[in-house]
Image (cartoon, rainbow, N blue to C red; front, side, top):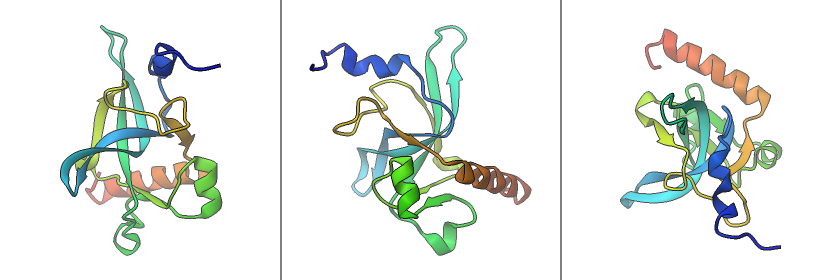
Length: 146
């Protein structure tokens, strides 16, 4: 049974959860400004009290791991079993710098589906990485990097 045009966008009416891994359009640095669908980590889900529309505070994912420089301040997933469990196709670093965390409306304008996926949700952050996130954010707060 094929999908009709309405059902393709039904995912937008069901918001993701914190720590879901989704695919969102995020600006590239090279070529500068070009939008590309890439894995992102949902940090918070927000809802507008007036419109009831959802927004997501997200951290973008990158293949540029920068392990030595970033291992203690970002979430880096490179274990192949964990990558499979989380739905990530390649080793990924989720950048937690405040300047790179954005809030996007939960809509098809900002989130999209990779081929073969019915929604932008491709997986979720495993519990061990959630604990790492809490620790990293606490240390960022202490060190003035939050």
